Amino acid sequence: MRGRGASDDKGCLLGALSGLAAVASTGTGFPVNLRFLLEGQEEIGSPQLGAFIRAHAARLRADVAFSADGDQHSPSVPSLTLGHRGAVALEVSVRTSSTDLHSGSWGGSVPNAAVVLSQLLTHMHTAEGAVAAPGFYQGVRVLSADERAAIAAVPLDEQADRAQAGVGAYVGEAGYSTLERRWVRPTAEVVGMWGGYTGEGIKTVLPAEAHAKIVCRLVGTQAPEQAYDSLAAWFKAAAPPYANVTTVRSSFSSTPSESPAASPANAAASAVLTELYGVPPLLKRAGGSIPAVGYFKQILGIDTTTLATGHSGTSLQVWSSGLGHASPN
Image (cartoon, rainbow, N blue to C red):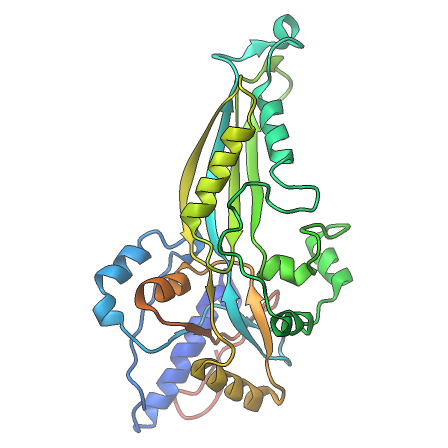
């Protein structure tokens, strides 16, 4: 399959359904009860999903969840994803005057909203790369030596990885590897900022207001509400007295989730992957967020095993055996 979302996540979903169809075609039935939940809003944070799961918790009750949203490490090396980071997003605004002011008449004597905001964003992280807001790390747990060793065992071609991203160097929180920073450490990233005149040419104004959008990734048992509250409080406390700072939380939100490597479902998935690939799966994490997985744990109290068929950065080929023989789709 080639196309928008072929690997994330249309092909993986089709692969799971094709496998179930193949079992159904044998006429022997399934040894377990199955319930299906298909939703298409994951990329925008699944804003309605939490309320839906709460309303239908009895119908969705289960022992374990399987997610087709994910990937395998490569076409020759399998992997199991044992955790997803959560997320919370906000917009921060700074106002320093009642209107834009002329840079010639007022420049050098009045505060500039864009400068104030840029200074706040500069100090949002410590010199060691940690988020500076007190309370932000509440719920972040220390990984065991075995967990860190499992992450270190995942191959990463740093030169190729940097080339793919088009960056000259890695940066981030001190004391952690690149994959640890991406998978098991929380972040606060500026994803957009604006203020003053941004059109063609120049307009000599001192901006009265400036804005930035920030997305945080969360780990462990960090709560999106707590992470937002800590950052909102930090921005207001760190701002100079002549600047009015406001924050608004976005609807994009997800709780982080983890699935024990030794759980029965992960053990079964590991056995299947080992049989198919001939080698045991790498134990990976995911830096992104899947709100459904967080809701399953938070509302239903069940872990999710991620068993997907995509390969990051490659096209996906889905094999269907629903008619008794393998044929590429």
